[in-house]
Length: 214
Length: 214
Image (cartoon, rainbow over all chains, first blue to last red; front, side):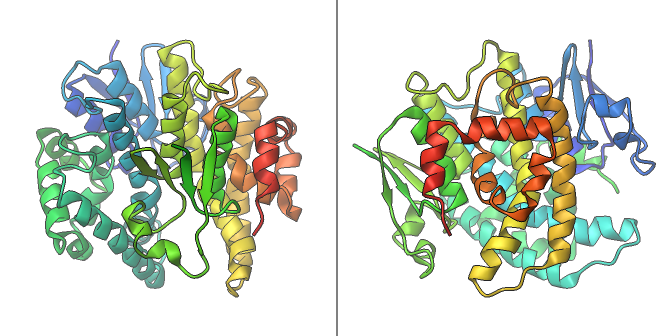
């Protein structure tokens, strides 16, 4: 039984799961959907992701959605395969991974997803980019990355000395963001920039990001 | 050593942690901050929450932030005390709790937090309420609650038969939302409404919500 990921490789949330599968060295099939035609908003797709979003995920009898929850499942279920993405030597270290996964979800993702939506997604759908929103969210992102800069000046990775889901979850949006003129928000912060160089050059990241196109 | 929660009881993110502490029956002190004066944006507070937000949390030597990460810590560290908020009989049940915690974080929280910010927070700071944003986010919230309605027609709680963090994390924003004229978005959906009646009448919820005021 091969793992199935429903979606398209250019989607940031799909890519988040593919990055995890690559780190694990697990085989998977991508079940492509016609997203532009709204296939994800119709049955039978809604029976595996009731929110009508990509990805949806199947591993034998297990059917899941929400990229970060899928990755936690993969990291725990296949703990001894490939990269240990929740590596911790104690309950406290495990808590620190949870904490930095929450930071990605609550601090980094809201401004970053808005910037990408405004600058990359809106034009595809013929909608204008609201530059005022972009500037506001870039300022918020800069403040978040100031905290990362301090954190990464003392730790190689966000949760400590190991590459974990807390780092991996940041990659998909950064793949697009780093190709934009605004990448200086990252490159102007030496430790954040070095962290990005490290995590973006992992073989799994190189493979998944090479297929990320709008 | 008593647990310390830095913040104010009216903050939704602080209340999220207090709800968990109440379910656990743990003693705690609330260390009040002058949020209106921006005390949370200054040292020494920034040393315990570098993002300058409330809450921050201390349990002996353990110092944390991000309400959902704090609650996972509490639920795991004090698993055998009070309500088991991550109760599962299998790895798959545990995965389902993670999934519905992610749904709260990624589907419910974005529209709900925007609605509360526009309708309750903005007026306090003398900012106008943008009714167009409110209507857009109310429509998104309604679509999310349609999925909840289906889910709760088959399960007493979001993750299944037990009250978990996946339910608890929804409570703080709903406490304010249910006092507003827009509460019909919840009450018009019978299973969501019954779920709210159940989780809002828990003794811990009654205690924490009685102290939630702007």
